[in-house]
Image 1: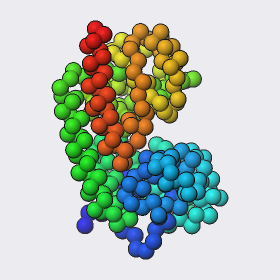
Image 2: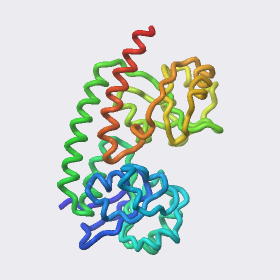
Image 3: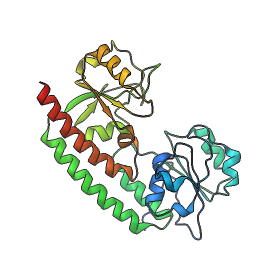
Image 4: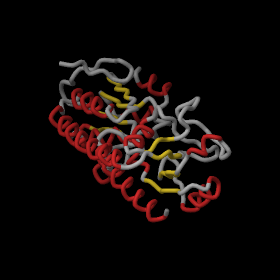
Length: 272
């Protein structure tokens, strides 16, 4: 059997008995549920909202960045699932002091989802469900690749925040998702994974369109018009969950991007 290792290189054994799981990341919470582990979920963050109705009974333990350790202790968790980008290192290290098993993930490529299915499915003995997800992932990946290969690649800007304005570097899961659809994020190189930028950056000349997501910053229609005025590039509003949520959401996300890329190309041709 292949060792079940997380992003920190820690090995996790398949769990014997009834697990008590706390997920500190929205996409991981959704994955836990889709693997058939809802009844083992004893805690989540306030941002863990899918599947919405099913999660109403699961207690909240704060946010992704401000986990309430007092509430987490009350869950008597056997396992906490966290992410390097989403959760604060110092908080996760403190959790390691009182929760027996802390699983830390850090997906940055689409294919990392396959390892994630194997890891979470293996630890909680949901191998069959993990295999079904992997098969659905492979089908969606193939569909997206076909769309991307049929269209010219485009350079895009994907803002994730304002005050300051921030975007994504190419060494991020978001950039990998977009690249799979034929959208290459700018800048091509950056000093950090989520760089700040100004609207007079030289690399903005390479941008052909702006993809404006619904999260983590809730951009409005007014800001869409503002961005068009700032850079003169067409702006496409996009569902941020479909691009940034990994795990089981990656399957729907790839199909969403395939449809969006085709629709956007049609609009671009009609407009130009």
